[in-house]
Structures are given as structure tokens and as C-alpha cells.
Image 1 (spheres, rainbow, N blue to C red):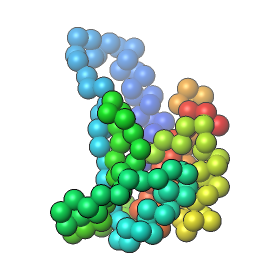
Image 2 (cartoon, helix red, strand yellow):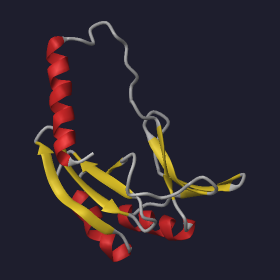
Image 3 (cartoon, helix red, strand yellow):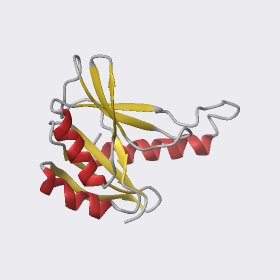
Image 4 (cartoon, rainbow, N blue to C red):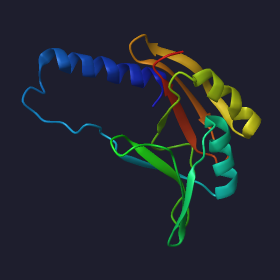
Length: 150
């Protein structure tokens, strides 16, 4: 989703909120509860994400698959980088926004020095929503970043 599509979606959600279309409807806490980012070279991808976010992905073998879990708690959304049959990196398809809360400039600054490529620099969506950026990781996936603060 590009910046223009995201802005259109936000405006549509605000419109529906004003109409009270969702009155009496119970929603999930999060529309997403888990994500997986496919990788071809697990160690390279693990090093990339560890370096740009300055944390450690927890590595675990799950049968024929290797997964590197992003830090998170039981109440929030989390995910993993995944290596194994059926996982194929892509610049097309679903776009996952990773949380760079208050550290967006720092994370963006570490992307290219660690083998990735920034494809959309930091851009303000709205003051309420904050900033986003997109990059291609070392495996060829297009991934986005979000931060409500600069």
C-alpha cells in the first residue's frame, strides 16, 4: 500500500466512525495477530533485523522450519522471520509495518549499512498517525516502518 492508498484508507475509516456504522459491533483488539516474513538466508536476515532494530530475534527450529521471533508480549502483535519450504521473499503482496516507535530515523539510518535498501524515505502520513518509510530487506522483501513520533 502506498502513501496515497494509506491516506485514503484512513479518511474512509474516519468517515465510517462519524457515521457510527460500527455501533454495537464488537471488534477484535487487532486485525492482525501474527506475521511471518519469508527469508532465503536465515542467518543473513537475522543479522539484518537484529542490526537495524538493535534487538535479538529469538531463533527456534520448528520441524523443518527455522524461525526468528520478534520481541513482543502476549497482549500485542508479533511475528517472525521464517526459513523453509514455501517461504519465498517478495517485493509484492502484503506489506507489513514494523514498529519503529520514536526511533524511525535511527532504524532507517541502519538499513543500507546492513545490506537493505530504503525505497520510500520517512514520510508524514498525518500528525495523528505519524511517519512511515519502506525498505527492501536483505532477502528481497518490501517491508514498512511506522512511528507515531519523529
